[in-house]
Image (cartoon, rainbow, N blue to C red; front, side, top):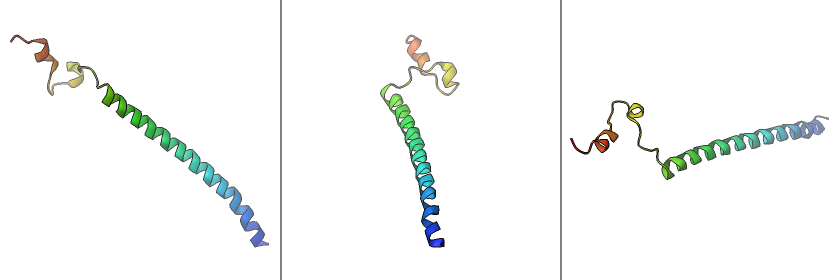
Length: 70
């Protein structure tokens, strides 16, 4: 009797595990694709000249470019 119940018990378990694995794989692939797309966007089109507000007080590169005659 227990031998016949073992395979019945294992089949649904395997299906649920497979379903979870497929769901997890789909989520992981989606996250990876989103990250790769974001990196590709940054590499292909770097952000335009950042405004002094965005950079803060680290180093204002657009200032010397705007004032070529000191």
